[in-house]
Image 1 (cartoon, rainbow, N blue to C red):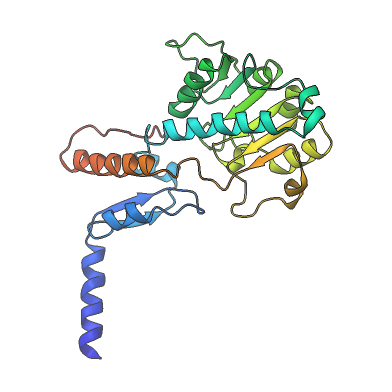
Image 2 (tube, rainbow, N blue to C red):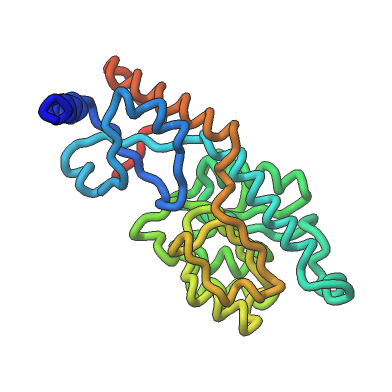
Length: 273
């Protein structure tokens, strides 16, 4: 018994001496393959107080563009699936949104994922506009300074920005009203980007046309009111869960670690300002 205790204490001491890696993720997603690679060599800490890191001078890295292509494909798939399944039969045809072609698509957050979404939807013949923290001088899409203005000029609103205190419930009642009764919301970002209670109310009252949701505000709990709605496509936070995305993330994490310990520039630093 004493030998087992000593061995356990030794293991705990050795673990405490390992460098720390903080993993910031949605509670509903487990990356077992990644943790299996890292855990023998690092202590893994979940959830990050970004403000505290900024004050302490701690550098944080993100997923960069590891997920961008697969999440972009998923956003397009949700959009297309919704538009082709809205209600049924003659109601579908009479809805006037037979396909994505020619639709005005507003992208909330033109980062890695948003840019990939725009690239794919341009090929569908969509008219792209966007809002982001800053105007992107390298792109020609029309820019709107706020989400309400973007929603007014959009048939489909695709939400793929980062979740921060400033973007919490960025898709609110005013935005949904501006989007209108034929408008569609697609969320592949984070659940709390959308005011979920207001979304349910707007959907049930017919104040917006529909929604395609891969994320929810209190995962894994999903509002039961959504289950009976014909104008909603629901997905269990799976946009990033492809072998290619996970492999890209593994490679990026290990590359960032190698760069950090070699005192080289990190590949995907998170801006904490």
